[in-house]
Image 1 (cartoon, rainbow, N blue to C red):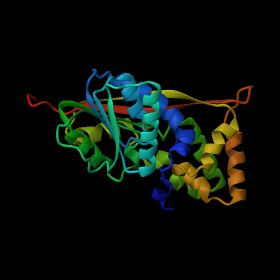
Image 2: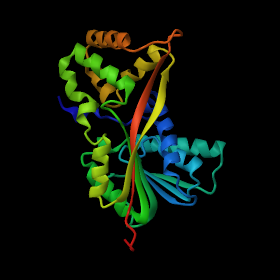
Image 3: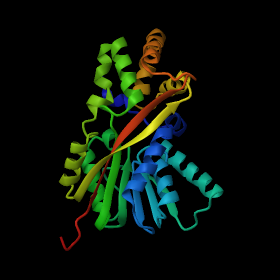
Image 4: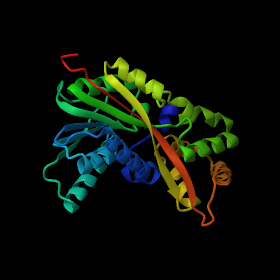
Length: 279
């Protein structure tokens, strides 16, 4: 199978139903962990629908937030969400903009930002080390480079159960499992990438959030929207195979007495600083 053809992220609304509601929780925890000062210039690489940018704008009191993503659809969704948010809660002191660009060739000047961050993106890049080196180039000496990625191998409860069910139905689906495909989504790999980019004071922490689904439909239906590796795989199945996968998946998830499904999702966060001139 061609794994990358399933890594499709273009439609903001479908992403929100599938992963956005959980990525927002992680973004809040991540921003709190960074603990950055007010008035900084932020760069959000692989901004997607603008979840992390919105959290930064709302809680970190930045001077500027620039979000960059290669998907025109996502950038459009991010712009719309930012406009709606500003209309509801004006943030005149924050300048926010979103740009269509490649994470591996960032359209920013050297040393022009204070903080460069990336949320749930690095594993989908062909060369994540190049993207991190670009982020490091863009921050000033002493500036912060940080990111987080899902722990696909062991920390994503609903995805682990999905792929176990998929492999039971079709063993060849194992080749598409993010847990085995995305080796960068481990703390030791992230630390190595940060060190290779010349960053110092590197640290990693787990970030765990609850993923509570109202019922099995709330869990299953986002897998039908074709956004991301797992839903992209579901879209290729014949109706009978899709129904069988749904039944096997449904039998594998724990239900509470009210029919809801309570699982957890874990991400790995990493941060490091660009060496200052005195180091």
